[in-house]
Length: 223
Ligand SMILES: [Fe+2]
Ligand SMILES: [Fe+2]
Image 1 (spheres, protein in one colour):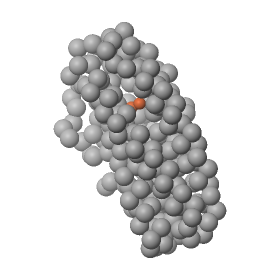
Image 2 (image 1 turned 120 degrees about the vertical axis):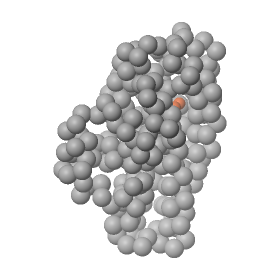
Image 3 (image 1 turned 135 degrees about the vertical axis):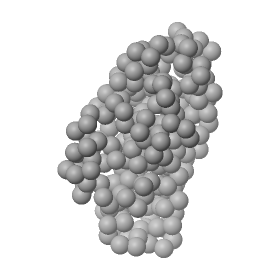
């Protein structure tokens, strides 16, 4: 993945899709391994639960942001995109995310990897089954090349700011979601994606103030 040089709302969507896709893959693969071999220790269990909780929160916020903020500004400019279908798919995924959240609560209450974890993995597999065809349609219609000529640079950045603000309002907690977003991305995309985060977040909160809280997720994140 090359580092994007010009702000482009389609590049930010590709970043979020890459974050969520990796989050689903890691949660399912590592969760399956835990159902078979158990958690290696308590921090791994805690980190895994925080990781999956962040994934579900980010996924929920991403759908809301597309439906409420991004798609309304795309509609007139990308008339061939199936917006109503995409929004219906967001709605179809929501009950699965709510069930996944309930399952995460049950996983936190069971000391060893057991039936609740197996149920959570099954739910995430169903989410993944809907997620991949859904983002294929989005990425086919909203490519960086196509969107580059439909909005000027200021419009791209204004839309990115509005989308990031809406997502932040509907996801959390920040001390888990911000590291989850940044460290499920390859470093060159991470630099691009973090460009509009306030320096206090990237230089103080993330590496210092919040570090202990998100450190258990490290085994599931990229370096
Ligand atoms: Fe979507
Ligand atoms: Fe999307």
